[in-house]
Length: 309
Length: 321
Image (cartoon, rainbow over all chains, first blue to last red):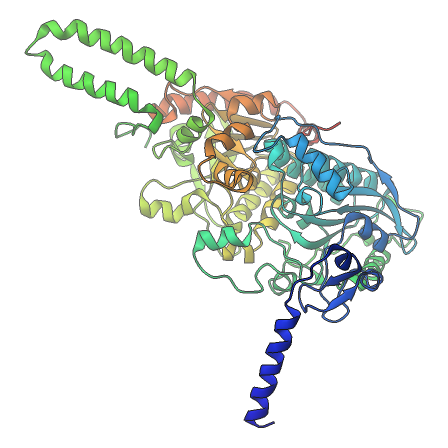
């Protein structure tokens, strides 16, 4: 290719990009079609769904709600929900520009969920498991009393049944509207996980776009295995806060799953269509060999993941 | 350094008091020439005292925050030195770093030997930089973790003093996995079989405070605060404005009294009038009494009971329907 061609093709590419960047307009159009945030490809919604909300062209992972996530991970019809009716109360009678109770109702109307996490017992490729899925679409996936309680009860249920525990996290952090009680949920879940870890059962934490704050700094980082989805942003403090504090530009891939992998914080980055397979494999790998002694299974003790001290 | 060398710097809400004190000082100077002013001075002193009392009885949450952040407020090292002048400092996370924001210590208080950790803000500029303004990096939490394990091994009770704006939000902190460091501390503290007492002496900032706050008994000094996020952060997120800090303080219920009512902490420890920085010795004495009292009670429990007591305590937190 000579120089002239190169300039010509560059010009053409630019023009195409201009066209692609035009935003979609009408609602009906959006319901049928979705545009990939990364490569701007137009995707037929139904096709996107069969591909587990992953862009077939550039492998961009769209955010997935809790219900869809359960459908993707649990064997069909095997999910048995726990504590479905649990709802937040308003312990501080919190009011900012609007009352907390009103915000709760609004969140429920938007997401169709009672709370930011769904928990239950299920089967994954035939293996029994306790599964919790957080939903960023409900109140930013924030952890208040209910999220903490549901995750704790799920951990206890898994411990009682000696079954592996899997939690898919997606959260902006602790819920400010419940103040100090939200903070205490971090300790509550970690405390339950301590008993769970001591019992020699397997806990796999899956980090999805985005996982931050109090959730990362408690149960999400305590997994025997920590799996991240490609491109997911995961961290403790938000990017903007860090930039303001240190007054430096951060690397472009800062706090992405790949960045965390490079820095030894997660065991693996697994694409969504391989996730169920990977889970099943990890569970099978750690199943105690003999069914006769399910109590003490030192052989089944999970290995310490990389990055743990 | 057990006493205040300088006069306490008045806070914004204390300005009326400061003005009155100034006037009294001026009057005192004239006293030698005009002995008849003595009655006036006495009257003023009465006025000063009653104003002081009413001022500190009706503090707004943001005033508590100001006292908790007072630059002359006693810090962890001050308390340690007052309680046990021969306390031994322990350094380092054994993995390459010694975080100045987290102080580790072996200390004997009223005959009880314990392992103590505490966050430390600095006093001078250089000191502040060394302590990173009281914001630990992951290495600081790992230093605490190592000491918790040490305490558990030698059956020594653990004391944690909390005074931090929060865990440090920085590039290296994220690279070294701040969240995992905090999470692991929560898990480790939940599992130790020795008594743990934590006291919030100033600011209890979010996860950074909780990482050394999973205790059998949690105490708070009267003017200290404990919250899920800094009020500044809360105001900027929920109100989208930096001048709603006072409202955020109010809404989050972050003062010692309110948190006691929520049942999260066990005891509020009274401070000298105006705050701990007015009288280090009394503040340290009050705190010591409370710590020793709680610790003595906890030491009667068996190791398994102690662990269960702590786990049960945190299991109860939450409000739902």
